[in-house]
Image (cartoon, rainbow, N blue to C red; front, top):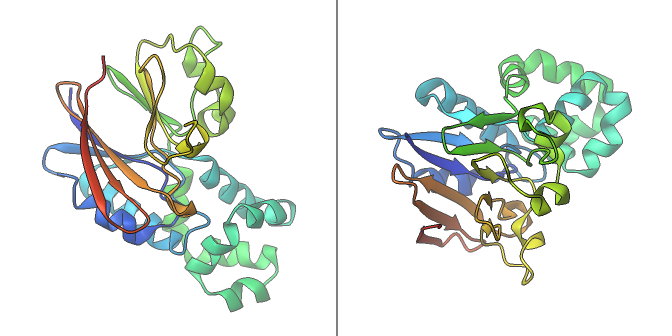
Length: 247
């Protein structure tokens, strides 16, 4: 079993990502992003380019999220998807690649064509992202899987990238601990805190701390012995660290 360092939903929060990465050890740990690199935050372009660089130089694994999927839908059919994409933070992403004047002056079609021309490497990178990564004892996925299926691998993109309550509440019979993002943990904790969420059965761990909503960016180290070490960067940029040992 290799040691891994897992990062939750970044959503363009570049400065916090840089800070969190100082706790990752590239010599002994595989770096895994759980998706939603983009949208809402101020520097999605920087996050995408950094993640792509980490993939090229260190073999980092970046899982695709629903926001990457919606961005690509917009890119391919801008007239159809602009209203929804802008509503979920897409305008901030496009502004980070250009500036507000360009984004607001060009038609969606012309802006999408300009993106394709100017940033082919970044777009190819986002199109290549897998829906999940499976390890011996763990499954890493953006949103979750269809736990009603005999074989979760047939869940499909809609489940891998967008599922919420049916996965959170379902019985995990995959035989693996599932580490996921997508749903801010303040929606999973009764007291609305941004700490990571661990299911009552301790086989599902949610690490989307809602960083872009003034919450926390989490980095979870999965140790060789099966223990976990958590690094969390809050809204004030202070870092907390704690060890987790599940049953």
